[in-house]
Image 1 (cartoon, rainbow, N blue to C red):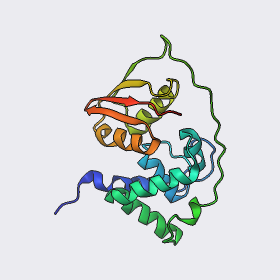
Image 2 (image 1 turned 90 degrees about the horizontal axis):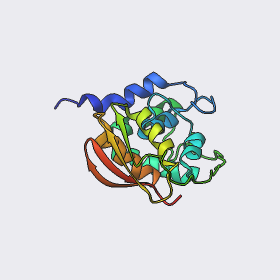
Image 3 (image 1 turned 45 degrees about the vertical axis):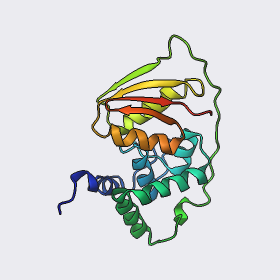
Length: 187
């Protein structure tokens, strides 16, 4: 049985990104934070767990636990997670590097919908990290429970968008690649 080439991508990305700095705060990311960033689609712009939680407006422990649960369900991410465990010499769950971190949840006011805020967005061929980051910023300008249609032609979108919705709490209403309907969560 041959291994799917995409199956080893998270492990290759972890190796490539070891020792990189968080895109937001410039603190060096641990291996587990790099894997968490990969899960959320930030392969080219990894972030530390506090910055991920702040950006997604999630409690840090809740986000960490959701990410760990997702990693356990995907063999490709689990291999990368175990490599991070090996690097840090741990088998604890959650690993010590992700416990006791603090994050300030800055809540910005919701901008009401208007003609300048699109009801749909064509992301073209944007790759996973850029796609999800730009969509996140677009979506947060929309009022709670509003629906936006996204057209994403990237080959990983059928996997990345549903996973991102599960992890962030937004609802994936419909998915027929390359078009997706996503409802923004309450807050």
